[in-house]
Image (tube, rainbow, N blue to C red; front, side):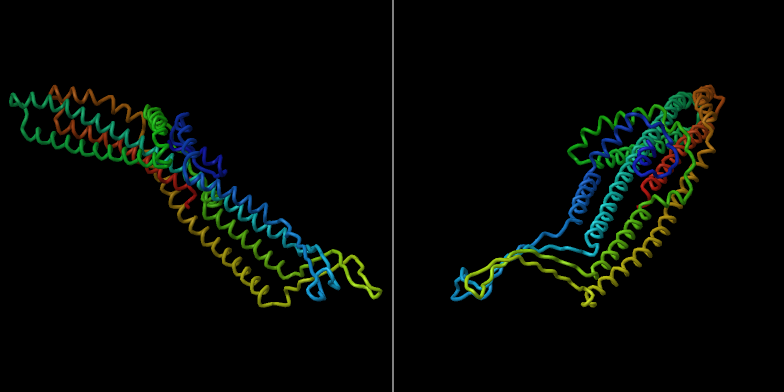
Length: 416
C-alpha cells in the first residue's frame, strides 16, 4: 500500500505518513521488485562503472622509454658515434591529476543520484499500483454487495408484482439500476486487471510468475481492511523541492561543470617533464665512453591561447548554463511538486468529510432497509436511493484515497 518509509530510507526525503498499514507482505513485494527491476540494475552497474572511471582518472601518466642513435657510419648501428636510452615521465602536472579525479568524482555523484532516484521511482510506482489494485478490488466488492442487495430486492419485487402489488415501472427501474451497477463492476474488474499487469511489468517477464504469489498475499492482507489508517500532512514545499529529482540532478550538473572549469584552468599551467638515462658517445682518443643523461622539459600551454584559452572560456560558459538550468529546474520542480502537494492535501480534506462511524452505521442499516422494503414500509425508489448513496459514499472514499496515492507517488518520485 502507499508507504513512504522505503523511499525515505533511500534519500532522506521528507514525506507524509502512509495511508495504509505497511504489511510484511507488501514490504517483501516492494523489496523484491526493487531488486529485480531492470532500470535499478542498470543504474547500479552505471555507479560501478563510474567508480572504476574515477579510480583511473587520477592515475599518473605512464613513463616513456626512448632509444636513439646518431651518426651511424655505413648503417652499422654498433659503430654509431652516439647512442642512448632514457626514461621520461611527468614531474609537475600543475594539479591536473587531482582535478581530473575531481571531475570523475562528480560523474560518480551523478550516477549515484540517478540510482537513488530510480529506486525512489520504483518504490513510488509499486506503492501507487498496489494501492490502486487494492482500491479497485475494494470497489468491485462494494459494487458486488450493492448488486447482491438489489438482487434480493428484485426477488421480493417479483413476488409483489406477481400478485399485482407492484407496478411494472418498478421492475424496469430495478433492472436498470442493476445494469448500471454491473457495468461499474465490470469497469472495476478491468482496472484490477490493468493495475495487476502494470505491477508485474515492473520486473522482467521471466520473473513475473514468481512475483504473483507474493502480490496475492500482499493484496489479501490489505483487503482485510483497506485504507484503515488516516493520511498525514505533507511536508513543506521547500523540503520537497530540495530532494526532488530536478534539484538533485541540476546541483550535480553544476558541480561537475565547476570542476571541469577548474580543470580547464589547470590545463593552461606549465607541464614539467623529466628524463634520466645513459648515453654512449665517441671520444677523441678513440673508442667510446658512457655517461648519464638528464633532461627537463616544460610545456607552455599559454603560448597557444586559442586552444587552452578557448577551452577555459567554453568551460566557464558551461558553468553559467548549469547555473541557469539549476534555477529553471528548481522552478519547474516547485511548480510540479506544489501541484502534487495541493492534490494530496485536497484529498486529505475530502477524506475528512467521511466519518468511519457514520459509514459503519449506514452499512448496518442495509439489511434493515431491505427488510423494510419487503414488508412494504419502504418504497423501491427509497431503497435504491439509500443503497446508491451509501455505495457512492464508500466508493468515493476509495477513489479519493487512490487519488491521494497518485499525488503521493509524484511526491515520492521527486517529480522527475
